Length: 490
Image 1 (cartoon, rainbow, N blue to C red):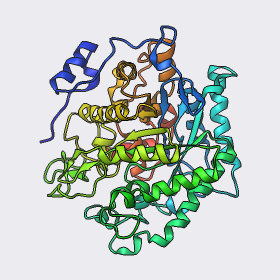
Image 2 (image 1 turned 90 degrees about the vertical axis):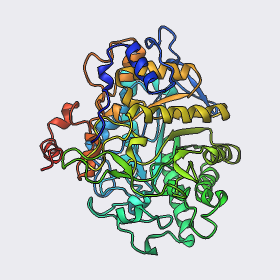
Image 3 (image 1 turned 180 degrees about the vertical axis):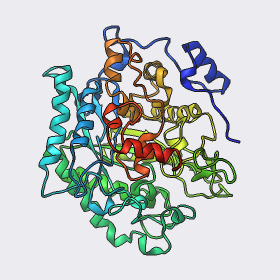
């Protein structure tokens, strides 16, 4: 039977929340109360990045909405989300959207896609975000606002034509994940001679981002997508697999080419710092509405292909290679901006975005979700100790809910991380950082994300993503009733 964990909202005081952390054996700094900017909050302190100023310590993670046009252009729904990013009060907008470098690399048929012949819609998106920031925080407020565009190829999880059909391109044949996406032979594996064209596509997308006016591009290497998968290509033959040099080669080549062709454009990397085996609901446990507890899909966790994991037990972290990669990107390519995450939303979501309510294709968490949050935060702390001269954005904060600002204030003050990133929370309460910095009652309007996972369940079932429970905009859409039926197992 699936375990039941206490809800974060059930802890009525900071002391009670801290006591729960202690009961789990977790060490995490928690401020007694978050401070406002007027009180000298560390969250309001600026960051320096290669001569540029990032105005505070709040960051918006890339928030793909499955809500573009099928030809790769933005819609009004997408423009609304980007304007909300601008109104958030965050001074670092990381990637905005997962931007497919070419149409066949899309994770869904409505993903924003590079269209070199038509860049004005992308320019309008960025202008709308900055305009909303100025309207919310003043005419000069965009001077310390840094906005990036996340460049991606979805690799194994490509669905460029239909929501229900994978058209996977993979780095190597995977012992577990092949069956999940229908890969049955080597035809889906990228050949070495195809990779120069892929590098060129990344460079072309980066040139467009620079022309449009983005401050940086993120070369996405996380969550099981193509660039992340290459990092675990232990069994891939040739110069793009096998040892550390080979497995990191494609990422380094892409970054090097962008640096060469776009010398004035900053580069960031969102990296899954560690991974674990794919999980599935425990067989025989749960039903159509409530899935079983997550268990590793493979009987053996030895020699499982996971980047940032121990070779003899892939359930355990080993940050040796991730740290070596970050140092190399810093030293050889001048990358000073990293956003650190973990795992994948497709095959082990409990380590990537801990949630009390799992998505429809997920499973009940095999651990208190707070354990997964602290695991990520502590991994970033370890990296920060070794790389004090780079800007690190942390992940896995939304699950802390009312206590998110207490944790954020403390970890930044203690030097565990430079910037606190928020993702799904931005869909329900996009002005929360601004309210915290103004010293307002940020919980009064009851918009705090409760990790219902509707923002994931909807796209998993072919619908647009959004916060259906808490954002009235989505409550009024026809997908609202359809989503209720999906969750009810109908």
